[in-house]
Length: 627
Image 1 (cartoon, rainbow, N blue to C red):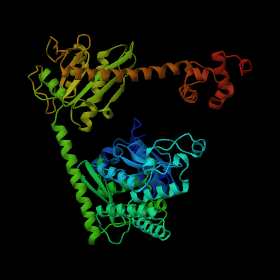
Image 2: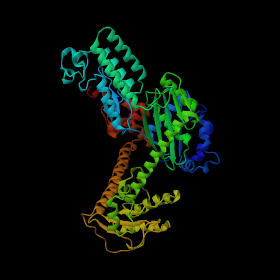
Image 3: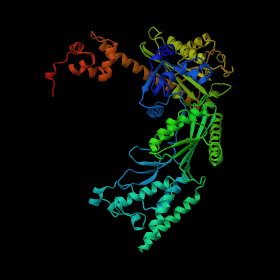
Image 4: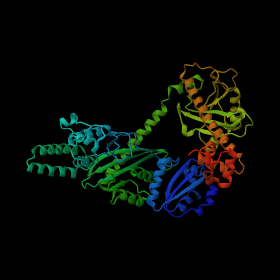
């Protein structure tokens, strides 16, 4: 289905809330969005004037189908959109890189929980605080917890049965007063759980209520002449005061709030979150954004809010932003449901709150500038193998982008062409392409190579994307000549027929790499070139060629297997390709169909066809089967 066909069916789309998904002809998910009115929202992408936005113009030109998911409410649409974006990573949605590489502090979901640092998030009911971008601060928090509380440090799984059977004995921590001995049942689960609750409050920055409770318990213990316990509570209060003094007080009204600022620069961006708890900055997080070209601050902020809070448990009373999101009321309602109380989304304009948000934005701009600088530095730094390959081939500039082609078939059947892309010596798998070829009659590698190269660069020229620095053809003179023929037909000016000719400036260099002796063929040069086997440049070239071969062979085998599996079913009267696909989908293989019962097959294709299939495979009646 193409854009014109989608326009024709717009009137049949539902008018309620939901999520829409655009896909390309190859099944690639292009974009996922939510809408209060699905019909109006999807229609917006096919109205006049959309060509003024280059990003939307590029996306709509690739749309082949649209799928909608109807929901009962706008909040459900928001949750579904965020979940699908995270799972499917659409090409034209803003790509938010989360903080999975940063550590968390986890409070385990056990009868006697443990508290420790981890980089692995497991959805088993445990509570995760973080992520911590400042690892030193995280370790300081863990040290403070161990100074204040007697949380067990062992890795044993402790439950009532372990305690009853006395499978574990207390360790040194118990004897030096660092643990109360839950492994032997020396502390009740209720008392231990209350202590863990305090730890959770402390890590989330809620210290005022905790300090008040400690003072009350200390005074009570002192009045009852439990002086050792009172002294311990006093020491915990002192440590808590020291911890509070380290935190900067930024707000005297002590309302829990998150401040979120977004900085954008061309295709990149950075989102920074200040977590303010009880008037103090309790933490800072940053997320980097890619594929942001053409997106507004409002769009990035809205998508970020959904992604950031989807799995968060600690929802603040207020969220401060630099710009109001389009569906602000829906977001506020969703966050209120998660929090169990009202959440306000605010755009402060004046006063201390606006100044603090400005500070948050300054941090985002600084982090974005550093990230862009690092990317430029990486681009300027060329891997040695790429540089040496350019010298080995006699090119005036190093081939930073290399595209390699290969052909795979079995005696001319199920022919596929593969394209792999390497940038700065690293595989760019998202740009790999496979071509199912039909034009070649029999095992004609030259014709197959011509079709593959033609289809690739016809599309490159139509989309206006840059040509590679080096095109590698897996094969000798014949394959290279076939590729050169197509390049000339398309009007692409390749590098000249000698190594001294300039490549670049839109003029890719072409070589053929013959596997037998690892000989390299250049256009217009009769004798092949040999590169020393020890050269890192040759090793890189071999790696790229082998990857193109692997990619081609794997897809050829898959195509051949599908054809072979379906051929036997197609021989059965009454079973066409559609029914054959249904049977293979249901039973997994021809063998699965062979050993299925008549009733099982009949559920897919009907009783009459099922009997024909059984007769074809000459299976005995079910009554003769074992079991």
